[in-house]
Image (cartoon, rainbow, N blue to C red):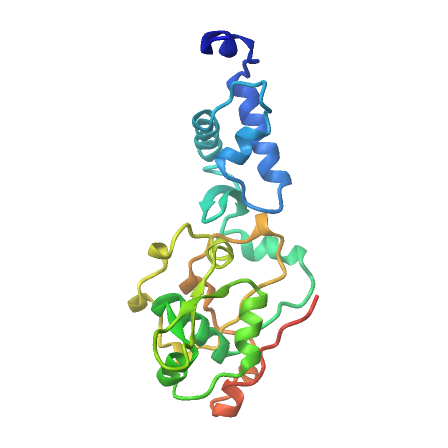
Amino acid sequence: MNSSDTRSETTAVDEGMIRRVVEAALLASPQPLTTAQLAALFGDDNAVQAGEVQQAITALQADSAERGVELVEVSSGYRFQVRADVHPLVSRLWTERQTKYTRATLETLALIAYRQPITRGEIEQIRGVGINANMIKALEEREWIRVIGHRDVPGRPELFGTTKGFLDYFGIKSLDQLPPLAEINDLPELEPQFPFEMTPPAVANAALADELMPGDDASNDTNNEAGDDAEPEIRND
């Protein structure tokens, strides 16, 4: 059987159906999906290529230009998410109290994001204080950082870097899309708060600088080193 016979046996799918399936899949999936994953939904008998899925995505992005949700590409693929301008109101649906990270944890995360690969000792040298082991463990359990190698020095300390999960959470495709450090205010002066308890499609498309917002309780982060390096407030769900 030649290639022309094979193509003739495939079932054609019209553009409207492709768009409907792509939209439904992205709304139903708790995780971002790639064009290849979306094309695979049509099975081997359907002549749907990644390029056709990409056309459907482009059309859906145009359709949602004036809506409260947007279709964006992040590191792991495409997803629908609530637009940043309406997110403060929509987030009222999640009544559970948002978990806060200490300033020390956010400083550590920012150093890993901007200086990776970086060792724990280098982080401590920059911050001028020791790091609680639970802080690193918490970021690893969150799947925001991981060990990506070892420094070729005595002791071979672990090198930390960020993950695709980190990029996905902040709604960016690559580290190149992180805001320049000049756009982030003096980090030690921040008392930030991260909203963690959100379903993935509803995460606002905010860059790291937008997420580093003042908290509503200054007492959660003290200016002494013991307070800075206290164990981060992380709930084990």
